[in-house]
Structure formats: structure tokens, C-alpha cells
Image (cartoon, rainbow, N blue to C red; front, top):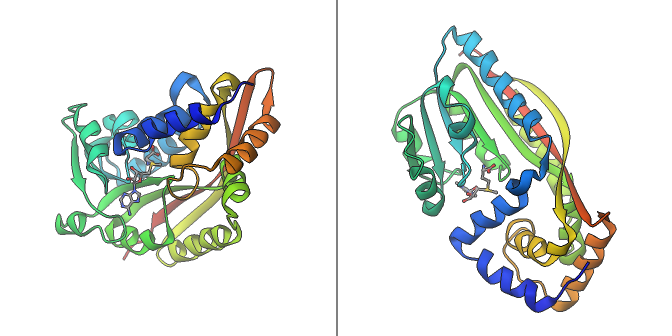
Length: 266
Ligand SMILES: C[S@@+](CC[C@H](N)C(=O)[O-])C[C@H]1O[C@@H](n2cnc3c(N)ncnc32)[C@H](O)[C@@H]1O
């Protein structure tokens, strides 16, 4: 494994712009088939949508993807199940990338998931709400208000994983508040929905010759905020990556907390 701090800082400069952040997300999650078991994850969402369509007795449901990013899971995989998908994110660059796909069923709206003012102003009740990765306890009350009776809120939040261990190593990240937040999310959802909570572990594989690129991408996506690691932090991170390396490949894993919450009748 060949690494070099200045090579890392060069990649960091590319990834630490607004569009660069989405390149980093793409590099970490999706390029080169690195997500082991992505089909299973797509299938989990698919089953939740199918169940929702059955409850409604309809083939097409109104959906919203909160914090959709540039990937936009719902519009990418589930357009055939929708009358309309609203893709919302606080970052206009993400929405610009979604708009390039010119999906006639998609409407993009720039909004903050903590308030969702513009989404509320539409006056819709959604059949399916999806929010994955950057998902917080503070979103839940609004999600409950926006869901139609019988509608489903499908949520994913990474609970533990190598990215969070790296965050602990270089930034003294404390994982316990995250566990408490996950417990609170379940309790909040239970106020108005039937909740199925479960966990799934996935892994991602990278070539170890690209460790500097991997660490630069993780520096903008996985450390809580974008930070250029100091040389000292970088050396710790390189040692950590070495521990995750076998046969020239680096394996990173994450365990997702998952919620499939079905809104009770009013
Ligand atoms: C890691 S990306 C995940 C994108 C997408 N959900 C996915 O799974 O590929 C997180 C996204 O959440 C958005 N985001 C973060 N905080 C937000 C907020 N308060 N309101 C709306 N979007 C937010 C970011 O702009 C970013 O596009």
C-alpha cells in the first residue's frame, strides 16, 4: 500500500467543493460495484413500496426522497411505482444533478429537512417517505405530519461501522449519543406508526493503491464535517486502513439502523 500525504491533500481539494462532495459520495458508495449487497438494500426498499401499494390498493403512490443527494434512490429505482416523486435536498447542486436526468415524474425542491417549509406548503400527504444516510431525530415529527394514513416512512441511518471508528480515532467521536438518537427515533415513530426496526450490515471494497483517494473522500463525507486531516491524523488513518486490508483490497463495513414505519389511521 503506497500512500503520500500530499497526494491525499490533492484529492481532498477536489472532493471538498460542493459538487466534489457528491463525487466523494459516489466514489465511496457506488463506483466499481464496491457496495457488496446493494441489490439486497434496493430489495428492502422495494418490498416496503410493494407493501404500501397493497395497503393503498394502488399501483402508483406519491413519494418524497428527503436529502436525496445526487444519487436519488427513489427516482433511480422506483419511478414505475409512483405518480410523482419529490426529490428534496438543502443543496442545490444535488438537485441540479437530479434535474439533468429529466425524469418527468420528478419534481425537485430545495428545502431544509428540519423545517420542510416548502414541502408542507404543497399540502400533500405522502404514501412513501424515504430518507437515508444523513437522517436525524429532528426530522421525525415532520415526517409523521407528512405521511398519509397507511403510508410508509422508510429510514436508514448508519449505526456503527469503519467510518465511525475512523471518526473516533481522528476526532474523538463519541458513538453513544448516536445510539441514543436511534432509540429516540424509534420511540418518536411509535407515537403514530407501526414500526419495524432492524439492522443490516454491508461492506464496500476499494483497491488499496487508492488509499489516499479513499481517505480524502472519507474526510469530506464521514468525519462529521469536512476536515483536512493533519499529517498526524492522516498517519493514524493510514494505519487504520492497513488493518482493513487483505489481498490488496480494503474492506469497509457499516451496520445500518433501518425503520419501516406504517402510519396508523387518524
Ligand atoms: C450522504 S448524502 C446522501 C444522499 C442520498 N440520501 C443517498 O443515500 O445517496 C446526504 C445528503 O443530505 C443532504 N442534507 C444534509 N442535511 C440536510 C438537511 N438538513 N436538509 C436537507 N438535506 C440535507 C446533503 O445535502 C446531502 O445531499
